[in-house]
Image 1: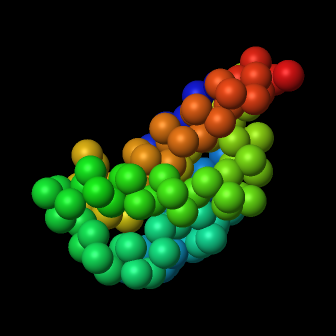
Image 2: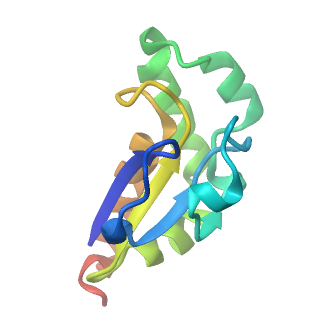
Length: 125
Protein backbone atom coordinates (compact mmCIF):
# COMPACT_ATOMS: atom_id res chain seq x y z
CA UNK A 1 0.00 0.00 0.00
CA UNK A 2 1.28 3.41 -0.92
CA UNK A 3 -0.64 6.62 -0.30
CA UNK A 4 1.09 9.81 -1.37
CA UNK A 5 0.08 13.46 -1.51
CA UNK A 6 0.75 15.85 -4.36
CA UNK A 7 -0.27 19.37 -5.31
CA UNK A 8 -2.65 19.46 -8.24
CA UNK A 9 -0.32 21.97 -9.91
CA UNK A 10 2.51 19.41 -10.09
CA UNK A 11 2.82 17.33 -13.22
CA UNK A 12 1.15 13.93 -12.95
CA UNK A 13 3.55 10.99 -12.95
CA UNK A 14 3.01 7.49 -14.35
CA UNK A 15 3.49 6.01 -10.87
CA UNK A 16 0.82 8.20 -9.21
CA UNK A 17 -1.73 5.39 -9.40
CA UNK A 18 -5.28 6.55 -8.74
CA UNK A 19 -5.31 10.36 -8.48
CA UNK A 20 -8.07 11.73 -6.24
CA UNK A 21 -8.74 15.42 -5.63
CA UNK A 22 -9.60 15.91 -1.95
CA UNK A 23 -10.57 19.60 -2.04
CA UNK A 24 -14.14 20.82 -1.67
CA UNK A 25 -13.58 23.54 -4.28
CA UNK A 26 -12.11 23.10 -7.75
CA UNK A 27 -8.51 24.43 -7.87
CA UNK A 28 -8.02 27.79 -9.51
CA UNK A 29 -6.35 28.02 -12.88
CA UNK A 30 -6.27 24.33 -13.74
CA UNK A 31 -8.35 22.44 -16.25
CA UNK A 32 -9.84 19.01 -15.68
CA UNK A 33 -7.67 17.67 -18.47
CA UNK A 34 -4.45 18.97 -16.90
CA UNK A 35 -5.37 17.64 -13.44
CA UNK A 36 -5.49 14.03 -14.71
CA UNK A 37 -7.85 12.94 -11.95
CA UNK A 38 -9.51 9.59 -11.54
CA UNK A 39 -11.95 11.00 -9.01
CA UNK A 40 -12.96 14.15 -7.15
CA UNK A 41 -14.08 13.46 -3.57
CA UNK A 42 -15.57 16.72 -2.36
CA UNK A 43 -17.35 15.00 0.52
CA UNK A 44 -14.10 13.82 2.14
CA UNK A 45 -12.71 17.35 2.18
CA UNK A 46 -13.00 19.48 5.32
CA UNK A 47 -16.37 21.14 5.80
CA UNK A 48 -16.75 24.69 4.56
CA UNK A 49 -16.88 25.97 8.15
CA UNK A 50 -13.68 24.15 9.10
CA UNK A 51 -11.86 25.17 5.92
CA UNK A 52 -12.87 28.81 6.44
CA UNK A 53 -11.82 28.74 10.10
CA UNK A 54 -8.44 27.14 9.33
CA UNK A 55 -7.64 29.48 6.43
CA UNK A 56 -4.34 27.57 6.00
CA UNK A 57 -2.90 29.15 9.14
CA UNK A 58 -0.04 26.88 10.33
CA UNK A 59 -0.66 28.02 13.92
CA UNK A 60 -4.16 26.49 13.71
CA UNK A 61 -3.07 23.22 12.10
CA UNK A 62 -3.06 21.11 15.25
CA UNK A 63 -6.65 22.09 16.07
CA UNK A 64 -7.62 21.81 12.40
CA UNK A 65 -6.28 18.26 12.35
CA UNK A 66 -8.26 17.33 15.47
CA UNK A 67 -11.49 18.76 14.06
CA UNK A 68 -10.96 17.29 10.59
CA UNK A 69 -10.30 13.82 12.02
CA UNK A 70 -13.59 14.13 13.93
CA UNK A 71 -15.37 14.95 10.66
CA UNK A 72 -13.87 11.88 9.01
CA UNK A 73 -14.97 9.38 11.68
CA UNK A 74 -18.28 8.47 10.01
CA UNK A 75 -17.48 9.63 6.50
CA UNK A 76 -18.44 6.86 4.02
CA UNK A 77 -15.75 8.05 1.58
CA UNK A 78 -12.96 6.92 3.93
CA UNK A 79 -13.40 3.16 3.34
CA UNK A 80 -13.86 3.75 -0.40
CA UNK A 81 -10.66 5.77 -0.66
CA UNK A 82 -8.80 3.31 1.54
CA UNK A 83 -9.81 0.59 -0.90
CA UNK A 84 -8.09 2.49 -3.69
CA UNK A 85 -4.85 2.39 -1.72
CA UNK A 86 -5.07 -1.21 -0.48
CA UNK A 87 -2.73 -4.01 -1.41
CA UNK A 88 -0.12 -3.20 -4.01
CA UNK A 89 -2.04 -0.24 -5.42
CA UNK A 90 -0.88 3.35 -5.23
CA UNK A 91 -3.19 6.21 -4.30
CA UNK A 92 -2.25 9.86 -4.74
CA UNK A 93 -4.30 12.40 -2.79
CA UNK A 94 -4.28 15.62 -4.78
CA UNK A 95 -4.73 19.01 -3.12
CA UNK A 96 -4.39 22.66 -4.11
CA UNK A 97 -3.07 24.38 -0.96
CA UNK A 98 0.33 26.07 -1.24
CA UNK A 99 1.47 24.78 2.14
CA UNK A 100 2.81 21.26 1.68
CA UNK A 101 3.20 20.69 5.43
CA UNK A 102 -0.17 21.92 6.75
CA UNK A 103 -3.05 20.67 4.62
CA UNK A 104 -5.98 18.26 4.67
CA UNK A 105 -4.37 15.74 2.31
CA UNK A 106 -1.68 14.94 4.89
CA UNK A 107 -4.29 14.39 7.60
CA UNK A 108 -6.43 12.29 5.28
CA UNK A 109 -3.43 10.17 4.26
CA UNK A 110 -2.74 9.39 7.92
CA UNK A 111 -6.40 8.54 8.53
CA UNK A 112 -6.52 6.24 5.50
CA UNK A 113 -3.29 4.48 6.47
CA UNK A 114 -4.62 3.94 10.01
CA UNK A 115 -7.89 2.62 8.58
CA UNK A 116 -6.01 0.15 6.39
CA UNK A 117 -3.88 -0.98 9.33
CA UNK A 118 -6.97 -1.46 11.55
CA UNK A 119 -8.97 -3.37 8.95
CA UNK A 120 -6.07 -5.45 7.69
CA UNK A 121 -6.69 -4.16 4.20
CA UNK A 122 -3.11 -3.00 3.78
CA UNK A 123 -2.16 -6.45 2.59
CA UNK A 124 -5.12 -6.66 0.26
CA UNK A 125 -7.13 -8.83 2.68
